Structures are given as C-alpha cells and as structure tokens.
Length: 183
Image 1 (cartoon, rainbow, N blue to C red):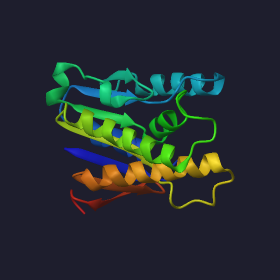
Image 2: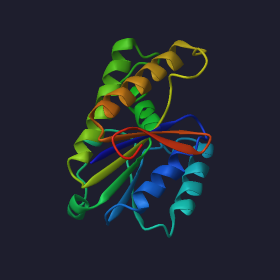
Image 3: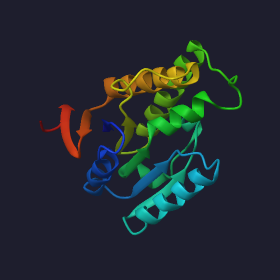
C-alpha cells in the first residue's frame, strides 16, 4: 500500500504521517532524505533523530537515488515512512550532475527520479507512507532556481498521488483523506 501525506509548511503532515505509521505493520523504517550540508541542516537532523528516538523506527538516511536502495529483507512485511519528498526532490535537482541553474528538463527528470525512487521502495515493503510539502499554493517563485524546484516538487507529488492508494492533506493540523481510505 502506498500512502501520500501532503500539506503546507508546519501543517501537521509529519506528525500525522508518524501517527499513521504507528498503526501499521512492524518493523517500521524511517527513511530520512535531508542533506546534512551546513550547520543548520546538521542541527535539524540531530533534532529529528532525538524526536524519533523511542518511537519504534529504524532509521535509514538517504539523500537521493532511492531507486538503487535495497531495503532490509524484513521490510517486506513492514512499514516505511519517507520524510520527505521536498528534500528528496531538492537533492535530485541540485545534485552535482546538474548545472547551477536547472532547466525545465532537469526539473522534469528530478521529479521522475524522486517518484520512481518512492515506487521502487513501495515495491519492497507492505506499507509506504511518503510525506511531501504542497507546492502549488504559495506565492510566485522569487528566482528561476526556485521556480524549477517548485515545478519538480509539484510534479513528483502528482506522480506519487496518482499511484497512491490513499492521499491525505493536512491543513492547520487537521488531516483530510482525499483519495482512498476513510473520508
């Protein structure tokens, strides 16, 4: 089963996704996609590690290229929580192989790589819950780089939502099921 949880910044989507995962089969894996570049990112990663401690997750950290990741064998009967598509898409789009100002084509392929990675992992576990930030509701992008990122993020979210069994949107801490599941 593939579940997508989306919402704006600080909308409660991560907490909701973790709550969903808590009621899913064991073992539970938390796949963190944030790149540890910079002091602020490293501090955020450490804060997230401490928040997840004791919640029954086994943590896997992978910044990009999820399509080449093989999960542990016991994941076949378990749950994987991917946190989050926003970081994954950024890491795919701004990888060393991509020029400093990505093109629309770069954005298209970054979105496809991120979505394909999620699909690859979903085929290796009983349940996969992917978290993404909703990119289509904000203000216009202030730069071409940001515009390409938002294009890629929106496309990746659409690709995953199209194949998901359930899609939930979180707004102001309130989750609403918009596809599958209980509405």
